[in-house]
Image (cartoon, rainbow, N blue to C red):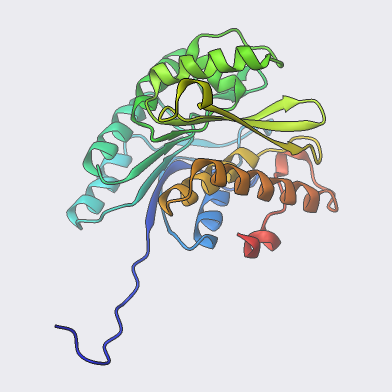
Length: 282
């Protein structure tokens, strides 16, 4: 029995973020950590690699963290830690797929959000191999929420990439993805002329109402790191119990606000978006 004036203490949700640390360029862990923290969730990083700056720059230092990850994670297991969510992003080698799958198995209570970072605009990133892309298909089977861009959706399904797909073709693409991933899916940042669209797929709905399209007015040209901000907000909202549609609306709205803010600065697209002054709005 509690004492008469005893106040029950709050608990805080935790998300393990399995992603790279790029020291410069505002992407991956350097945006996911502050975004998730700003949404009131403890952000716990698991570095997959260390980069001086992300790979959109002409040169970069890259240190594969594969050999260090198991020992790093083992200490969390020894401590008996638990997580409400697991967010995966950039993986530096195909061997990391096994490590991430083991991590998901060891923390079965966590909601799993997978951002299958492999490429954009029809091309894979320079550090990715065909083997890693193939093994990513194995990993996405564990996702409660999957957040590929159009390029990644095409890679996962073996679909020839085009910059524009009809609504019917996007629906077919989502059906193919659902054969790999049993969870909810959102294909992010689909070009829709003056708009950018996020296409949602909910396997729990009836066949004729599984797909929803949320559009947002295009604010400016694309910039690096916006996908990482998007998936971080999706992950935080998911573990807070928000429906996916609400998560996507929040994420798209915040990214648009960041792009508008960044227009007032002289920055290259590789430098990402100015999000720091806007965290208070999350």
